[in-house]
Image (cartoon, rainbow, N blue to C red; front, side):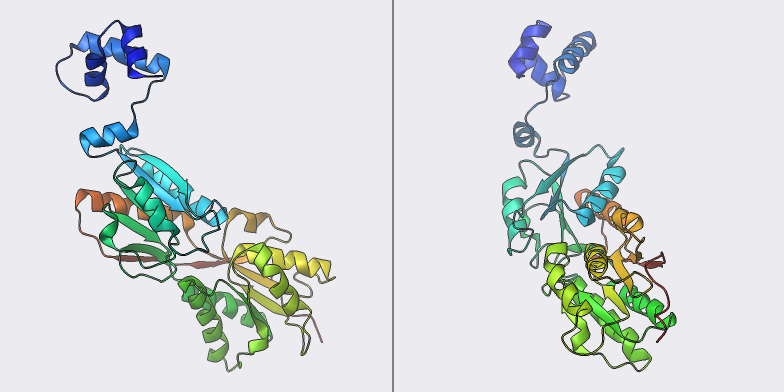
Length: 333
């Protein structure tokens, strides 16, 4: 549907339709109302690119993610809910077809979208230190490198991890393993730090044989999970703290394949509190990252940047432990 089709159906000139859809003066109210009714009937939308060239804005906020998975989906829910009443529209764009492993996917995405399709961007877990060079306001959610460069929203990863392990210690576990995240992410480093701090506080030596890199994904976590649950040497752990829920849920599946019962034989704690955590079997004890709130705060931050409102560069939200059925005291010796 083109602007010429609207003009023909409404019986007016293309110039008149252009004035109406772009809210410009010079058209009688009755004519404008008639044109808008035709626009609605035909489903006409003016080009975002053309609109941006005319107005120097599109009223669209872009959300750039490496891929659409449970973590980014929860953030998008929060962003979408907070978008109501702002006058802006939302464009969700997946720019990392490799799952975000390749460094620089966010810069490529911003170069495609910035200035012509979007007025500002929220970038989820960017792989590199971002800067203001994008030409539009940018807010990063949980960047790989931590809160450096541009405005950032994240959660208290270290404290959340420490509380998860303290929960296992409180149940009586002493041989606690860690299925870590990706080595290039600051969030993964902080979660391992919290794991180590909890053990060291009560005098438990950190055993390197009980730490594996799971990579935050079920496929990359499979072999490390089996190495923890089928140790080539030493005892099997009685509990595992996984750096995210997807890894934790997969570890439970691996435990079941190996004949281990959760939580009777093995306790498991995750991190994120994605919806799947509550519906896993058994329901997963996890650290709640307020993902939807993080998304909403990122949107408010980027709107303030568009308005020129000063904001602190780093907003960190608290985490909380959600205890469910995947944790229990260790089995009796």
